[in-house]
Structure formats: structure tokens, C-alpha cells
Length: 354
Ligand SMILES: Nc1ncnc2c1ncn2[C@@H]1O[C@H](COP(=O)(O)OP(=O)(O)O)[C@@H](O)[C@H]1O
Ligand code: SF4
Ligand SMILES: [Mg+2]
Image (cartoon, rainbow, N blue to C red; front, side):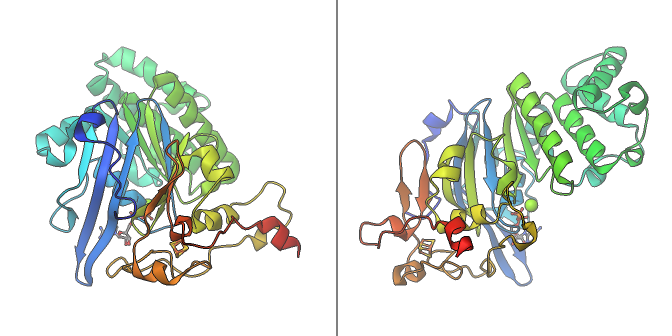
């Protein structure tokens, strides 16, 4: 079975989940060739839970997000045959334009990294929140205005009565991201996708924004997919983590499994690249040596083989099987085959001291 393409449930089983992505494959057709951005991604998301998708830039996180939002535009973008995205048991890949618009407007919302590009520069922020409240929560104008002020207060914007009348350019980066979150929650989405919501912000503000998302998620019982290249930001918010590499999920598990019992050499490398609080010399933080493979011509074996210090002959030849460690923890790596040498996660701290 192809790595990451393991079926996590039948269409029937998918009905109990809010979202069930099954063998999602997405390509972009470019002059250089077919970029295989997503290559067999499968995961489920239960109602009210939070999943983080983590991986380096270019591994297919945003394309996965766009697919779930129904935003892959043909003819350049193509969701490949056999891909399924069940939302409450219905395959949105099969939706026509009208049904997709209803789904996008009523069920899911997305917060992007770049709030300035996503906000309407000519409209007061209050009005942008109110529009969603009126359209999706059927409020009258006065009620929507009161609620818009309240939402700005809830996302931690000082003097919300004054700020509600201001334009996006009058807000700092962190404040604009808060406005985006308020707008997204004004739709009362069942599913919120945050695509690198804090990447452009400094560390303290990152933490505040993630806390706001977490609070609102709990209060509204919203299901959240948090997308980031930084494993360091997900620990407090996501119960489950999917690690993506070269268009595939290479490891998946609870937050504890990924941080304390990681099984994939790529996850080991990612963990090593997270700054530790006690790090005295943050400047020496390891980035992962080498570059990800070309998605126009990906390797036939393990996509990580060119950068993996444990690479064996079989890794170059065949796609690794998905090893199952129980309780939803899986990793696609040949090291877990009975014939492979036994390797533990390296103790990097010990190595560093040597
Ligand atoms: N519109 C597009 N046209 C061509 N290639 C694209 C397009 N969008 C994304 N890709 C390619 O798909 C791959 C995955 O991209 P993306 O999902 O944006 O990565 P991430 O969000 O993980 O940084 C990359 O190789 C990227 O170059
Ligand atoms: S050991 Fe082999 S299969 Fe596992 S990550 Fe390294 S190259 Fe891939
Ligand atoms: Mg992205």
C-alpha cells in the first residue's frame, strides 16, 4: 500500500466524522510539467477536535487546505480521480459550483497568513465582520454591530467600539490577524482552517493568537485544522498532528506520540529544528540539511531518502509501508520493517554536548 494512502474509513464510516479526506491527490499542470503537490493524503477529523498539519514549505499543506475549501481551480489545478473529501458524509469533490459556494459560506472558513491581502482594504473592519454575521447568523444591523464589537473584544482588540470603525491599514500585523479570526468566527463555521496564521508575527503575538484560536475553538466546538511549518507552535492547541513531507503524510499521531514517541526520521529532524526554551544559543538551531524532492519527478521510493541518515537500499526502491503503532499512531518508514536494523530516535541533546 502506498505511504499515506491508507484508507482510514469507508464512505459509510466517514459519516460519523466531520471530515474524512481519503487518498487525496492534487496536481498543478505547469509548463515545466505536472507538479504532484499532494500525493495520497488521508486523515479524519472529528467534530470539535483540532488537527495540526506540519511540514516544511512546499510539502503540500496549503494545497491540501485549498482542496478542503473547494478552492482548487481547473484547468491548472486538478484533484485526481479517486480522491475523496467527505464532509458530514458528502463528497465535496463531486459538488457543483453552487453547492460548493453554500458549503464554503456556511460550513467552513479559512484564515491565511497574509491578513492584509485577505481583508477588504476599502471597508471598515466592523462592516466586514457584520456582513458575515448578517449573512450567516441572520442578525439585524444593530445586533450585528453590537456583536462585531463584542467579537473584536473577544479576540483581544483594545477599544473595540472605536476600532470597529477603522480600516485594515490602521491595524498592526498582529491586530489584523485578530480581525481575520473574528471575521472567520462570525461565519460560525463548523470547520476552521488556519493556514500559517502566525507565521509573519513575532513569537509573543504568535502565542496570543494561538490562545485566541484555542479558546474560540473550545467555546464554539469548532473543528480546527492548523497548518504550520513550525512544530513548535502546535503542541498546546492540537490533539493530533500529521507530519507532511513531499505531498504525503509520513507520520500521524496524538500530540504526545509525535513529541515523545516520534517514529519517522523526518519527524526527528523537525523536532530537532524546534527552538527549546532553555536554548542558550538559538542562532545555532539546526535546519534540516538538503532539500525536498522535485514534485514533478518524485522518487519512486521514500521521498525522504535523499536527506535521511538511515537510508537503506530498499528506501530508494520502494515506497515504505505504513507502520501502525496503535491508537492512530502511524509512520511510513522502512525502519519499522522486521528486517530493518533497530534504530531509536537519536538523543540529539547528548550529541550536542559531545
Ligand atoms: N498554483 C500553483 N501552480 C503550480 N504549482 C503550485 C501551485 N500551488 C502550489 N504549487 C506547488 O505545489 C507544491 C505544494 O505547495 P503548497 O501546498 O503551497 O506548499 P506548503 O503550503 O506546504 O508550503 C509546491 O511544490 C508548490 O510549488
Ligand atoms: S529510513 Fe528509509 S524509509 Fe525511513 S525515512 Fe529514512 S529513507 Fe525513508
Ligand atoms: Mg502554505
